[in-house]
Amino acid sequence: MTVTVSRRVQRVKPSPTLNVSARAARLRAEGKDVISLGAGEPDFDTPAHIAQGGIEAIQKGLTRYTHVEGTNELKDAIIAKFARDNGIQYERSQILVTSGAKQAIYNLCMAVLDKDDEVIIPAPYWVSYPDMVLLADGQPVILTAGAAQGYKITPRQLAAAITPKTRLVLLNSPCNPSGAAYTRAELRALGEVLIDQPRIVIGTDDMYEKIYWGAEPFCSLLTAVPELYGRTVTINGVSKSYAMTGWRIGYCGAPKALVSAMATIQGQSTSNASSISQHAAAVALMGEQSCVADMNEAFKARHDYVVGALNELPGVNCLPGAGTFYAFADVSQAMASIGCASDTDFAEVLLTEGEVAVVPGSAFGAPGHIRLSFACSLETLKKAMERIAGVLAKGSAARGG
Image (cartoon, rainbow, N blue to C red):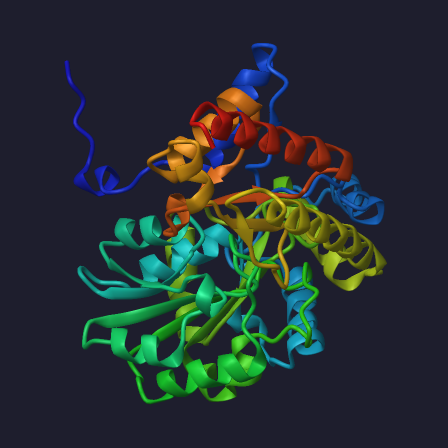
């Protein structure tokens, strides 16, 4: 008997980044010495004082259901964070706590999109954006921003992409995978395009806000364009900044009507996020913050090494990022030098011949690139760069290069 699945699920594909990590893990289990640079996960442990917050939650019996929208304790911590770091004012009714920021974005798509509504997504993009739009019966509209423009869309591109069907714009800064971050002036210019488009909702994914070393302070969209307050959803979480990926806590601030709609979606799917994790997240947001700065310093050092090492490889060009823990390299010339027709083939060669796992750029809407996560030790990164260099040298020699 053949089981038929919905057309909705047939429109989407499994996460490429999770697939790369899973395949690397299988190869390691088979005895292969694979270095995985695929996963977007800090290699640091959750800081001790935050982990202790989770232990205290268990000891205090904070192990029951909470309100779907989140505990008041965590909501108040989130409100304080938005005010302190971004100059954005919210009330409890404007805050939604989710099981990771991914759920906040999914809730947003489900809450505002009707069939064939269009969603503008700058590319390179986080792999899940287009598929979440498709799951909500919307239509992704991809705006390509290549290396020549720093992997950032322009106001002219945005304006040209808007149609009567445009319902949502998704912005991610600093960006996974490119590490590019919009300046305050750039956000202002994009926002001015959207001010005169009252039907359009904006979702800003600020997940990498604290993993940042740009030339000017980090700026969220609403900080630059407060006029969009009535239709912007500011999304963040504790996963990356506090090394809390497994705790699964994301959150957003938004107009009350949007939060209510998103909470309705969540209430019929997962209900509340973990009560234990919520208490730990409140500790993270309101506690001592030096751990964030320490991790950021380490990520910056790794960034500098990896970008420099990549640019020394023949046929590879990598722009420096302003944040995240990813390097996004144009490998189109290197692909040709070793006879690879696609970035997927190139990544396969690196895995099978060099035992280094990376994610093809086509997964992020940017063919001819690869994404490398530097959320691992410098020692590991140096070994990975040596292996990649060896693969390129061997492949070029085999083709008579």
